[in-house]
Length: 86
Image 1 (cartoon, one colour):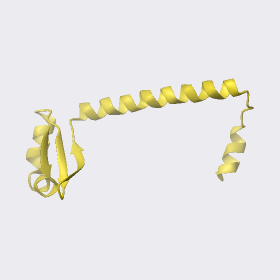
Image 2 (cartoon, rainbow, N blue to C red; image 1 turned 90 degrees about the vertical axis):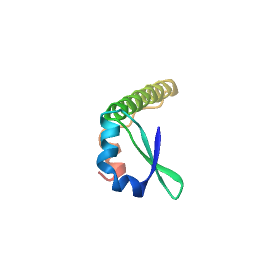
Image 3 (cartoon, rainbow, N blue to C red; image 1 turned 30 degrees about the vertical axis):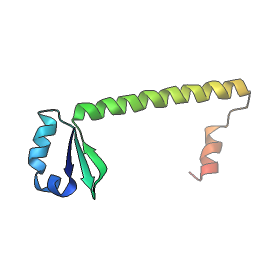
Image 4 (tube, helix red, strand yellow; image 1 turned 90 degrees about the horizontal axis):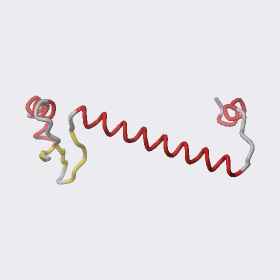
């Protein structure tokens, strides 16, 4: 993975975009010596989002199983919206 300052990235944006999109290179952007962002191929982003969705789904299943074991009654949707001021 390459590292480039944000200022240099701004000046060489087109070249950087080519490296990422065609060469599938990942580039870390730094500001004042600290990594602040990354430019990655779209395939990497899609994979990351799919992983996050999968983990969110696992968390939801776990929460539902815990709630079912607790025996607590469900809260009607209309009540939830009212409580949240929606």
